[in-house]
Figure 1 (tube, rainbow, N blue to C red):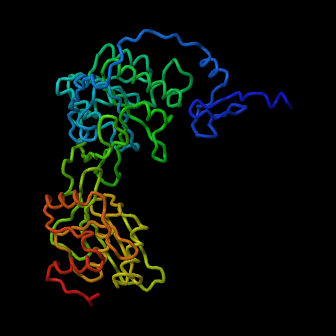
Figure 2: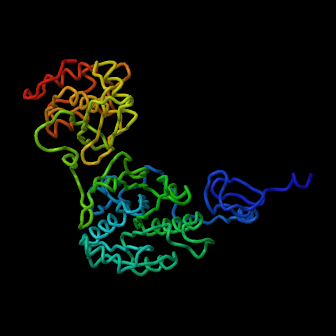
Figure 3: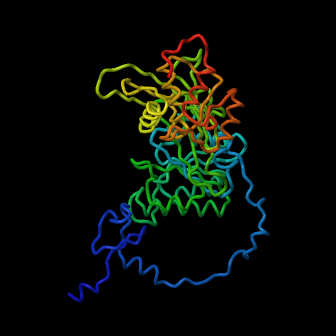
Length: 452
């Protein structure tokens, strides 16, 4: 028994250090697959001495380091540059993740083509498609440029050989989970392989001052597949997202060593590829005369202010449990707004089926949507419409107060630039006062049902 207690664990997780007496395929602590290795191998590596070497360049005070050594270069796609912080930094490693079919490869092929048109040599390595398949997509999207080089490889050593032969100024690898290294055991996509491939490409990027964009697969819960260390190794982590039911796509930075992480790029998927949308405000608004049950809310996507039209429809019902159907807004916040309307503003909704949706398929789930939802529901019940030059942005408390939202000054300024002469917000104080303010400016052609 004493010998068993003194025995050390035979296997250890290379990701989190979790130990076990027998080999398992999945770590019991961090839940990573293929990260459990023999303890003896890990101790053997650590036991080897490391000889110090003379540095290739002397360390310098930070005040003497010149930033001109790393000038930014535009990628050719303005919305992508906005998210990166103004352009691509030489030697930077960018990880772009997203759901299957969202358009990651289409976006990066457009980035590669525009960079090549500016006279830079671009190497696009696809381990998922053949060069003929990539060319077919390039013909459809208009990405046929002589300085754009294609390679279809899944071996890391061969990819490095292509880099030596082409000497690109921009490298795109699609994707990091489908390339394997002969120096590492396991199949492509295993945590060890992903870590080895990513670290090798990043070393090449730093040594050559070569910007590298890596495509990353995601798991079913939306996380980047592979070891968590992958997100720590790269300089920028971007996520490409969008609803398959709509053509709108957003790219946002989750990590950025060279710029802000609150910028959002907007794109539209078309039959000819992907198109930038510098001003997407008109995509989320309906056209024509204002109708009862609509209100424009001022949403904030990163630093970008977007007007989003919220629509509500109410139908009397005798069912004991009225229906609450929502799309594009938070169902729990809608339920809370309906309760505040009935209790604090005297607008009864418990005998109504309520349907709330946004225009254009955009998601508007931040607290600033509360006031727009309340005004839209009240307008549907009272049969009055909100003028096109009025917008709303405010959070509702359970006491019926309209609370301020983040970056309220920026929202009001951008709303004024877009043509909204009045913004209903926390300056109204109470929900009832906000509704009275909207009703006072409504079109006169519609008659109210009994006053509230």
